[in-house]
Image (cartoon, rainbow, N blue to C red):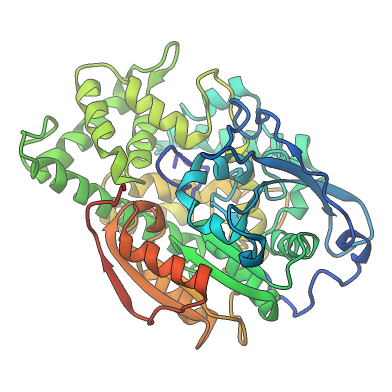
Length: 523
């Protein structure tokens, strides 16, 4: 959330799943020049502990019932325009189906978003949530090119990133603006210095071609796919490139494929403001008094004043770092990704108002991919690299200043942050591909497209536009009237029944189906 790094979807958290524009594709599958790679056999082994670039931590524990996670590396062309040239390795993870072999459909491949999120660490974190889907599929995910263990983009070191995320991301004068621009240039230059080989090859079109190869190596005739957040854009691009190779697919927390980066960021400003409005209303509607405001407007006014005060004088965060205005805003945004984190946000605000910024700093660190040991995953470098390789527009300070009134009107709290985030690609070493992704997929199998009316990061309107862009008879829209980023993991029975009906039994729900928010089914 902290500019100049721009999350057009979301970073992974304990409760929420963590975007790009592309050239028009063609209809060929991965066989075009990569026949040798389609014949490779994966050497599945016990999964190691995640690398620093993946976020660190212990090796994934077996699923309930004892099924162990297995990991492998798949070779893909570094440059899909030269498929017989140099290769890189993509890290994969899977859990074999729990059902009978006769009922197995194939592999269900997940992408959890970002861009920049490690699927190898995300799938085990959410594995139990997909137990029903595992009755007929092997669950599979991967680190996309440039991410985690898959030729990761590396930019600045941990100490430099600590300083990078402490900077003032909403400059008030020429001096602060020059400092922000210098820091952005420094970060981008470090990416070019440390990752020049991979930067030109992390576009979403190339990752979509990796999916085509993955499908073949896993032995499936069609790609069965579950894309979340940025993963919906990746899935749409795959469907455009290979419409006849789309199997059963679900898009959840859907990216709007019709928008350029400025439009997307402006929509996100409105989305986060809506989520903040909903949080404030929820807090003051509880039986007990809301500890951070007497009314919904008071909650928002106090947050705004608190952030203005931090701009002048930060408070203690996680020593030796202070909670700055930038870090606090990022922490608040992170909590708005999931209603499960709203109580944590209330606690964090209450403590921060009393001079302790620990909880908001923890939330901010989660957004930026920093663990408790002070090590950063490569979420942010990968996010910037993929966005900048995909997005053709390059915005300068005069563009931001022109757009600031509209962004401020969209959100007093988040507007300026997202507006200044547009400069992140200005001095990037690799040109962007296009204004927005091409996802039209005439002739593809139906794709279930789920939009959440309270989604902050991928606003609800994007689901309808994705369904329309996929084409008549392809995009099937379902609405979830709920809160947070994504619908399936809300545990809403109506949403899950629709997803299970399609992925497991091939039953396409009626277009326009609406699922209302309800208490989660935890049985």
